Image (cartoon, rainbow, N blue to C red):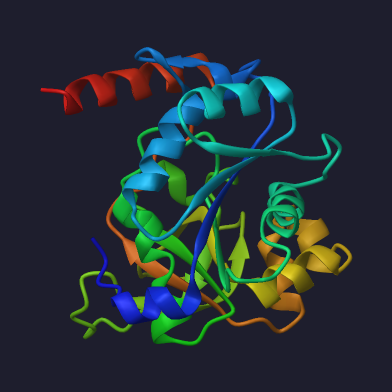
Length: 261
């Protein structure tokens, strides 16, 4: 797992928030989809707990999700079902579960990542500790040529130092785009939509209006860059499987079944 000192974790007192809602057009009732005998949201919750960075809370839009998480022994907060984004949803849950502001860092883990390596959740915190960033996120180098021009594969522009020997190096994110950027020969990086925010950054982020570039690219992280927040990316080896379709769900089941053996 990523090397995070106990003192750094104590200072930040991170909390992991998992936004979840039932409204999925391609995979109805996705959070409750069965993944080897457990609802998907419970699988994600267990992975987040295994990251061992702090308490884990599911910010959910429907009572059925709350019931599933609580039946597994987890904590869930029912939120406004009309939130426009997961960021808004987790902020509401955060203010309700921690009104005193004890948690100074918030990790947003998407609720459709049942096979995510818990170490990646820890890795997202590194920029907040090592680089005093406002937001940390993850990227992986794109290996498949067809993904380089696929607008559904979001690219992160960051100047990673080739001489950096850190197994998970970090670099400041300069831009995100659905286009193939940057130009000319060199690595391209797939952005992984997992974020670690300082609490102050998250609070500002959800209160700002949609940005011009955010609206154009349809990428909410650009709102942070438009407002001058420091957003750093950690380079990791793999992109976690996001479950959006029945085919993805079957693949997740296969991955978890293989982990049992």
